Image (tube, rainbow over all chains, first blue to last red; front, side, top):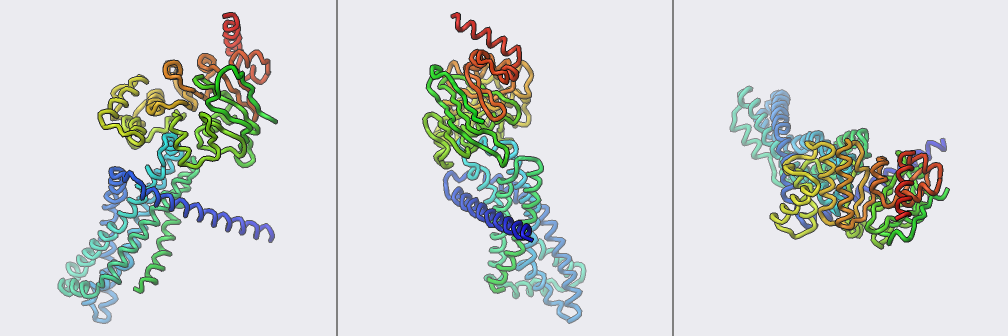
Length: 258
Length: 268
């Protein structure tokens, strides 16, 4: 019994210490972001890696999710004769929740894991130590551009997911089920509120990007310098970032008042 | 057990000095009371078996690893208590050749060698290009500008990393196993490059190595790490000391070579 309590205590202390390390790490990334040079070329390359290379995944997923949403919403709303609200249901579901959350999870799985693995591999091969010995901060040279790229790309990818999702819903509802296109689009237009829906969606994209960027770079940066260590950091990036995204989604939704 | 290195004060001013250094990773004690020094402008070879702490010693000098206790002085400056920003100033005096090169694998060889110049100097693009090509030529590399590190052979990679390590004209060059995994011609090439850097530029060079023949040829001073202790001196001094562990590690050929060199130097 005493041993179990001791283990629990040790784990709690480790968890708090880990949280402290990560907070300090986040502080140093923010400090690096405010310090010149901007590293614009590196940043553009990272945004390309994170954003452009995730496009096919996001567009394909968004379209399919929109189609399924249209189909499910139709089946439900048709029972009550409320098919004219299909545009609003599909649009609001995508804008408020599915767009940012699914984009957050998908980008974390694709780009977040790649970011953690990439930095972890640099740890393993001594590349970060090489930078330190050249008096170049690895946080400034490697970490900050990758974290900022995720922060910038996430809300943009989320917006694309939503647009393509709305189009997917349109294809099913209008083209396949034969509903009036004007009804679909006007119900969407009338239902969406800029502050409650669009701004909240953008905020979620930014927060999820921040979480994915910080967690993936932190896990990579602190990974054990072994193949197994990199593997662990990659896996934990996806798990921890996904859980954090889902939890923070609840709080943003609750606090934003939507 | 106390691990101390007694070196001849006459070999010159200590450019790098470790005193009473203690370091353990968990329960594994690497250094108990390590004392050693690398004289300015000389080549110091750090020998020892796997796990004896050779690379760790270099990491201590470069500030990549902090000791649990003791002092590490580089060019007269104590580095153990320095923060990252202050270490940056000390590291400008140091070039480091890592065992696997540690070149950034996502950028070309040219960009790798140019990186310190871009970060720390106000040179324009033409000057950087000229400097990078001069350094690459000095290590015998041509037409590798556009290649990625992964496209080079082991020997070429090591030489490209050496070019990057010296591009900022450091005072001290740390080389971690520069000969490991290389064929004899490449070992000779790297050895000749390091010797030339020492002779022509007066660099203080600290090399960790398993390669006994090169070590005996290059080293002005040897430091042998073993079983948590260290012994140091010129090759001839080490052999003359008669410590059986030293003789066993160096091997009979190296001992004979060192004894011959020692006799020669005494006689000259």
